[in-house]
Length: 230
Image (cartoon, rainbow, N blue to C red):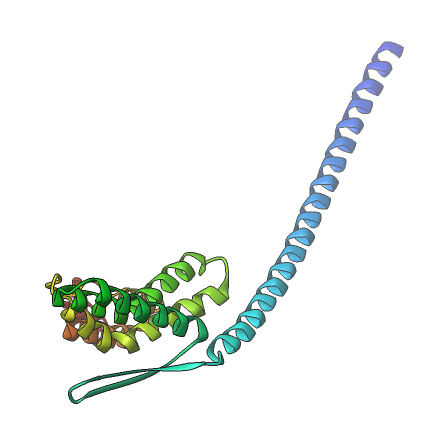
């Protein structure tokens, strides 16, 4: 009888130990879940605060970018076509260097075709500068919200300058067709990514009508379907 009681006591003790272990594990699991939830909530709060900071910083940087002081004015005339555009200090210096290079070429070369080629390069110096800025900021736009706004800004600058760039390309006797236009390409794509179909369509039509290289006919058709789709 005593052996049986000991056996029963041992079984009871084991059951109690298992029950206690399960309770402890359950409590630890709840505590872990609670801790994880608290940690996730804390992380979410940090993410929201960081997002708010980045958005505010982007707003301030964007305002500074668009309020940049221009120090010169670019002027172009070709028959009845008159064009003006303000230039930043860096853009003005770049254009002055291109003008200086053209004058040097004229002193050492008598071939009028070479003169035309470098005249073309003078005007395209600004177009190429906008291309470089677009590509630079485009690569950073997912890490830095300011970079996205600067990408858009230089796309718009290059599109504004497009009528001059077209004449410059056609001035070059060694070039037959217009190349792709990074400003139109990028800004159209950005509008497509954000569902701004009407603005993307407007840009695609403008690029197509100006004659820039690319699959603009196809993009116009696709965007027209997007716009009229209910």
